[in-house]
Length: 104
View 1 (cartoon, one colour):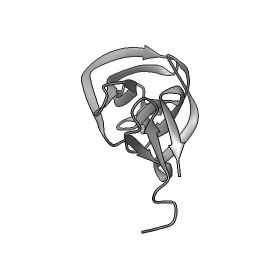
View 2: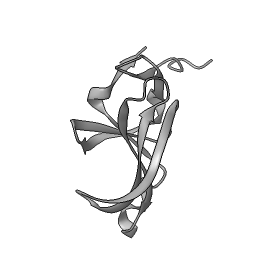
View 3: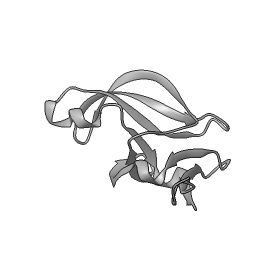
View 4: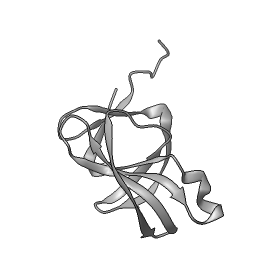
């Protein structure tokens, strides 16, 4: 096992593992509760139905994501970006900072 492989972000409500530190792409996102992070992958999450939403950077098709253990709403997954310059976000996960903590 590589060093840092145990570095995880966990659900602040039930401690369920949500994302690996090495999958963190950006800490420069804003969500309902404030600061949020973008991840390449997320684990132990359940996707809600997809819907279109106007966000700060444009219009997207997104799906809310919830903790698979406690059901806490954690953020969203970008399903589709309608603006070409935001296509890099497709398939990525946004997790709200307040809903998770980092555990080494």
